[in-house]
Image (tube, rainbow, N blue to C red; front, side, top):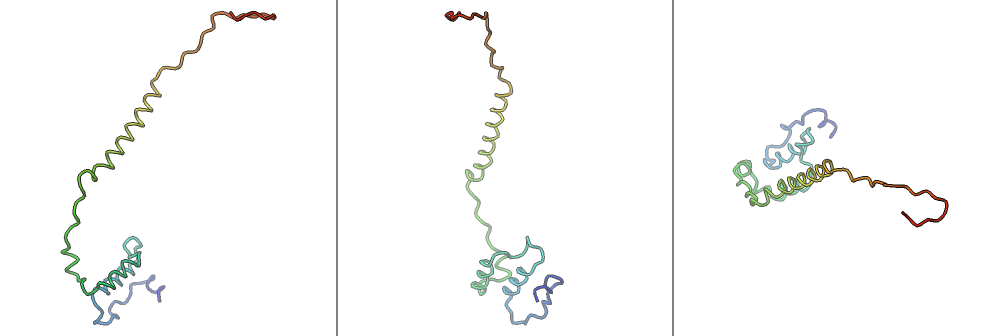
Length: 119
C-alpha cells in the first residue's frame, strides 16, 4: 500500500466525506513526496489528532504572528561573529607585518684547545 503512495498520488476521493478537514490535512502532510515539505515528526501528527476540534483551515490562516525577539537578541549573534572575525583579522595582520626577530651577531670567535674563560 505504501509503495503505491510513493509511485503515484493517493486517491483522495476515496476518503469518506465525514473525515474531518484537519485529518485530511494531516494525511496530505504525511504523504507529501518532497521530504522537506512532509510532516516528519509524530509529535505534529499527535498534536493535530489531539486538538482537531479546535483546528480549522481559517483559524490557521488568521493566526497572530509570533512576537518579535528583543533587539539585543537579534543583534547579539551578528555582533559576536563580527568581533571574532575582527580578532582573527587583527591577529593575522599582526603576525604578517611584525619585523623578523633579530639574529644575534657574533663579534668574535674564540678557538682554543685549552680551557680559556669565555671571551
